[in-house]
Amino acid sequence: MNVPNNEVIVTADDVATPSKTKQIIKRNGLVLKKSLGQNFLIDQNILSKIVMAAELGPNKAALEIGPGIGALTQQLAKLAGRVLAVEIDQRLLPILDETLEPYPHATVVHGDILKTDLPELFRQHFEGMDGVSVVANLPYYITTPIIMKLLEEKLPLENIVVMIQKEVADRMAARPGTKDYGSLSIAVQFHCEPELVTIVPRTVFVPQPNVDSAVIRLRVRQTPPVEVADVDFFFAVVGASFVQRRKTLYNNLAARFFTKENKPELEALLLGINIEPSRRGETLSMEEFARLSSALRAHGCK
Image (cartoon, rainbow, N blue to C red):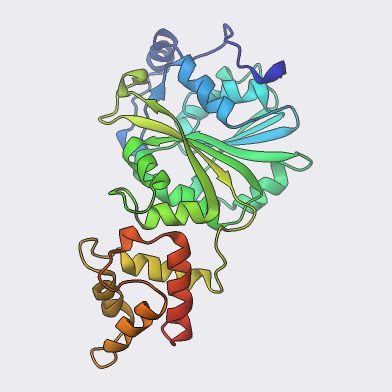
C-alpha cells in the first residue's frame, strides 16, 4: 500500500503502540535480548519523522537494519516501492511474517548486516529502483561499524536515516572547535552531509534504554567535500591527530609519523601549510586535514 503525498497514515495493522507491542511480546513468549539492543519504538509521531526524513516514494526503496517486530518496517512499506529488512534474530522472523503480511513488497532476510554482502543484496532486491535509502533504529553497540560499512562500500545510497544514541549523533554532526568533534565527525562528513532530525526520549521504547536517542539524516555525497589523493592516508592522519585529544597536533603527529631524529622537521612542515603546531586536532577543519595529509604524504610519511 503506497500512500500519496508522502504522508504516513496510521492504520489498524500498526504495531507501534504500547499495548500492541506488549501483546506481541507476550503472545510469542519473547524475551528481549539486551545484547542485540532490542528496544522497540512505540511512538507513531517519531516513526513518522524517521520515515519522512528518508524522502521515499513509489519508485524508491528502503533498506532497514534490525526491523524488530516491524513497527518501522510497516511505515516504510506505506511509502516505498520496495522494502528489504535484515534481521539477525531468527526468533523474530515469524512475527515479522505476521506484521508485514499486508505489505507483499516488504521482504525480510535473516542475517548479520556486518557480514552481509551488501552490493549483492542491492543487485538482488533493488534492481530498477530510482534510489535507495537506509532507514533503521540501530543497536547502540554497533552503530559506528554499521555506518562505516555502509559508507565505505560505496553503495548507491541517497540517505541514511538512523535512530542512534544521542551522544553519537552529536559527534557525527559536530563542527570543528567543539567538544564532540573528532575522527567520527570527519569520517561521516567526508561521505555525507549530516542533519539532526529530532531528539527521541527513552520513554518511547519498550523496554526503555538507559540513554536518550536522536534521529540523524546523512545525505550521501556524490563527491567528498575535499580533494584527497590517498583516502586511507588521510584518515590515518585524522586518527593520529585524535589519539590523545589533550595533546597538541605536533605531539600526536610526531608520535605516529616521525622518529626522534627527524621530529624537528614536523614543526617546519606544519608552519609551511599555515597550521600552528600548538593547535589540537579538534580545531582543524576538514580542509586543513586534507592539506596536512597532502603535506605529510609529500614528505614521505606512511
